[in-house]
Picture 1 (tube, helix red, strand yellow):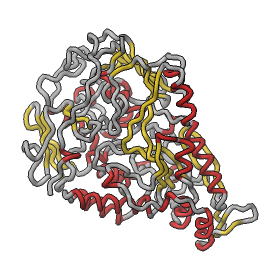
Picture 2: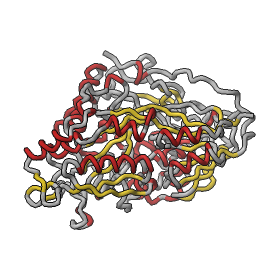
Picture 3: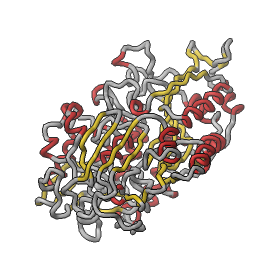
Picture 4: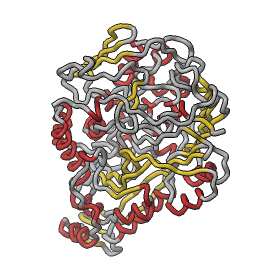
Amino acid sequence: MRIRALILGTACAVAAGPALAERGSDGELRVLYWQAASVLNPYLSTGAKDIDPASMVIEPLALVAPDGSLIPQLAERIPTLENGDIAADYTSVVWRLKPGLLWSDGSPVTAEDVKFTADYCMTPDFGCAVLAEFDGIASVEVLDPLSVRITFDQPRYAPLQAFVGGRTPVLQKAQFQGCTGAAGASCSEQNFGPIGTGPFRVTHFAPGDVAQFEINPHYRDPAKPAFASVTVKGGGDAMSAARAVMETGEYDFAWNLQLDPESVARLESVGRGAVYASFGSMVERIELNQTDASATLPADERATAAHPHPFLTDPAVRRALSMAIDRPLLAELTYGPTGNPTCTITPVPAAYDSPDKTCLTQDIAGAAALLDQAGWLPGPDGVRQKDGVRLSLLFQTSVNAVRQDVQALVKQWWSEIGVETELKTVEGSSFFGGDPGNPDSLARFMADVQMYTDAYYLPDPASFLNEFTCASIPTPETQWQGSNSLRFCDAGYDDLMTRLHQTAEPAERQRIAREMVDIVAVDGHYMLPLVHRGMVSARANSLTGTVPNGWEGSLWNVVDWGRAK
């Protein structure tokens, strides 16, 4: 059976908002991302704080629409089996660029730029942050100035991953050709100010602080955008960001507002702005480090395969930690209507959701009994221990009021089963940053457990599940780049990933994917899914054109934003 619908569909019709004003006539758009951007190159970071601002400048071949269909961006059309751009045996796909595209410096966009970008990400020693989206690509061939063929090392299902969505934009070869391999991370000028095709171009970037943009004079639609400039300010916290939009009116838009329901209602009552949520695949989860990050180890050996974790490798401990959590209560108290308790990391589309809802029932007594049976017994201070090893955890997450509430609740529940927990908070731009020298990033994972939200950006979660293969583990050799931050490695999981890449029939793909999620989360408890979150943002009442989209970043259609008159 051939893949249709969600993966290979053409773009849906997105409801049009009010007609935009004349290009640039709406002045400055002021945006708050309380986790400040540290780079404007998505190939060096998987954080939305970096990807979203960059998406106004550098663009992919296609975007994912709110309904999961694909919208041509730099591509002239979406490849399908019917139009012949996807090979009948699924071993290759041809992408065709729109004619006449220009970079913001006025030079033409060509197929060479697409090929270069793929090679750039796949070059050894680079440590590409989104390498999983290019997995299985054997070659990228320029067919003519506007066409490329991507050939896979075996039939690929689904074949539309690389260059689909804001995480894998096309880079200008002329700008980045000196930045391949190990040199990539050190190209500050390029990584902080990429030349792009989007509606805006970078005018100033101060990592960890502010990014400023102006209209791209060579943007392909002469009537857009309505805003003449954009300022994306970083820093602060979710509450101050929400207040700046809905209470003081200093800003037009604020991103990722993990706020309690009562605070939201109070701020909206002021009358300056409102929140809205886009439900995609975001799941707040706790990861259990499978390696030892103890400070007693040499720095170059911490959190590496050379030293397995002293107790989180025990399935009884992992399961007990999961059983102790009251997910429905946690979701109600901390997220309200913007979050639902979950046992899976693939809650959407519904066919990929796990039928096992056992984790939604808290069982403190059962968790304690499980630890007793596994030989983890309470010591004199009540903390369980075995063979001289104490169940004592360092639990890290980013600075955020809701996350700190979740930490406190989880700490209490774990204490009830004899697990000691020390809480650590890390400033968001550092926790989600891609700097290989940063010991506090989630990729370095110098703690026992950590919590954050992850998501996938295509309706088929194959590339997301590929993030947890053995080959995706961050190591010193990859400059700590890699998506498998929990250091989970399972041959059976990797084998299922191979089978998923070889399977076209939708029902079988869904079955395999659910089995993989069972291994890593539902049964294996290497990670503990907590809440299926909506991405909550605040917009000023005067801001028009914003469209919720759970598959793309919050600024995905900023070219259509304007200000009500």
